[in-house]
Amino acid sequence: MKVEDFVKPLGTFKFWKELFIMTFGMFIAAASVYYFLMPSNLIVGSITGLSMVLSELFTLAGIPIKVSLMVTAINAVLLLLAWFLIGPEFGAKTVYTALILGPMLELWEKILPYQSLLEPGQTSVMADPWFDLLCFVLILSISQTILFHINASTGGLDILAKIVNKYFHFDIGTSVTVAGALICCTAFAINPFRMVVIGLIGTWINGLALDYFTAGINRRKRVCIISSQHERIRKYIIEELERGCSLYNVTGGYNGHQNVEITALLTQDEFANLMDFLKENDIHGFITAGNVSEIYGDWNAKKKKKHK
Image (cartoon, rainbow, N blue to C red; front, top):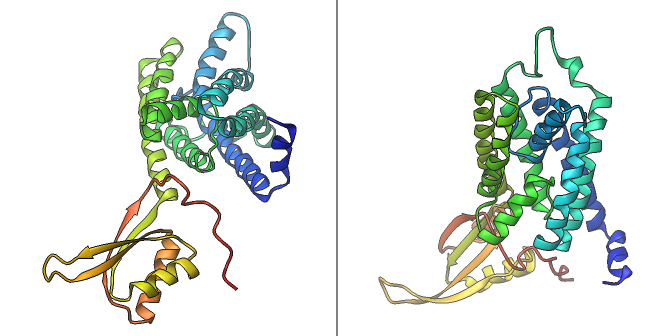
């Protein structure tokens, strides 16, 4: 590839928008790790959890290594897998997000050390491993959802999950759970059985939460309309909503009448606008609508310019 191919995107709004989103997403992810995972010593299925295990083992062997440094080192290896097995775009974005996780942990430590939040006798911020677990999973799942939506990730476990998702076609939440459970089992080396079980449950909840948030952020409406005024509806969808649609010739099973069915994929707001248009113009028809959580192809391509 030419140098221009890498430099050209730097001048686009999309690049800077996604850079901000990735930075913000990793800032959230680092907070969840620093305030809820590290103080409680929970080993939830993640590269951070694996880093905590390895850091503890190295420390016991007389070679102290900080968790943040271990996270950066492991992610550096996994980034090569991301680049070659998933694709340059995902790999390039994950290079950035993975490499800033360690520094982000250091940043939170300087901004507000979690030790200052602990009351006498407390060993974790929430003072209960289950509450620490739930807070960590909820915040991390939000961060993962934001990054997966722009074809990026938090690095580490997400890279492994994305590989499983791409080549074995599992849901992304299931992929996170499978990869995370394997990593979580390494905690037997430093944690009691009870803490490992809590970590495994947290990994499972993380997968469920990720699937839920991903479905929500990607949700679209698949609308099917059979109406005698299908041409007006078609023009509104194309010219006002700037969306494509498909037309099908249909035959009524009851009366044998010929008609046209319009099918379109719309956002929630676009669907609401379409329904308002039908109501305001007194357009009648048979309408069905259902939720779609995954769309492949050119649906999200840039819309055409508005008609003048």
